[in-house]
Image (cartoon, rainbow, N blue to C red; front, side, top):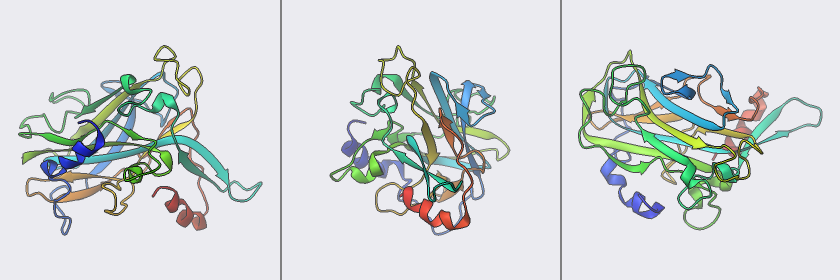
Length: 276
């Protein structure tokens, strides 16, 4: 899956981007979450992390039949702004992530980043089983986007992937048939790790010289298909895709950063423009 153009050629294999959105599928109403993990089987109780080795997981619960998924996570350096001096009506804008977070192909942190389709626990029936591998496993799974980040593109035909030089982590995978799933189970869809310790290349923005980073879902690719915001996609055996919202309170992760401060209603229209 190197570099970006061959991965786009593979998009039809994943069926996610040709699946019909005209009516609800079998997974309508399922909810996604994103966590920091402290181990393969333990989620942090916090949205915040200062860890030198970060591990993150995206899950989904409420799935009845599963064939594939598309997850898009935007990340970048956190910059806080105030609309009126002295006011607490602040907003967050994401800009180019520091070098320690640039795990894209050829990026300074490429060797420090790893992606895991289906999370970290395999097909076992324990906590967060792999939604692709748990029995009955989805057959013939292929990935058009394997979770390798894109980052820092600001010009040319690829610039739409990373607006304002931000980073995006994109998983788009599906198999040849849908398999029954238990809607009461929270399944692992995708995970990643990033070594931010000072001995991982002494990159700017690592744990020795941290810079604030925020990760958030934002479904907006392929370019030009329209922004859906804080959702992921599941596709069922009938090749129907559902846009599954990230549950409130489980839709951001912060590294050496602070929580987004609630803003006035008038601010939301301006906020939307920042994440396009």
